[in-house]
Image (cartoon, rainbow, N blue to C red; front, side, top):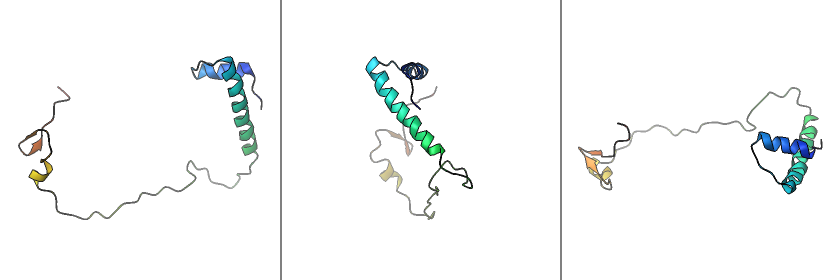
Length: 95
């Protein structure tokens, strides 16, 4: 499917893009190629294939939750720029 210059300008307007005459020609060719490739993909027989949004199955990988000794309070606060009552002291972000 070949796009016209007017169609490219309309697409650019919808996308809120300013395009020059040279860019219109460049985008016309690129967008036309993309649409031609989509037409080829439409011909692929996908009957019997389950719809999917992910081509590779995603799976969370969790490590076992094993208790371990914690750091001492003085070790944790050693590099804190400000501390108060064994806690980090930070500037208030909400009033």
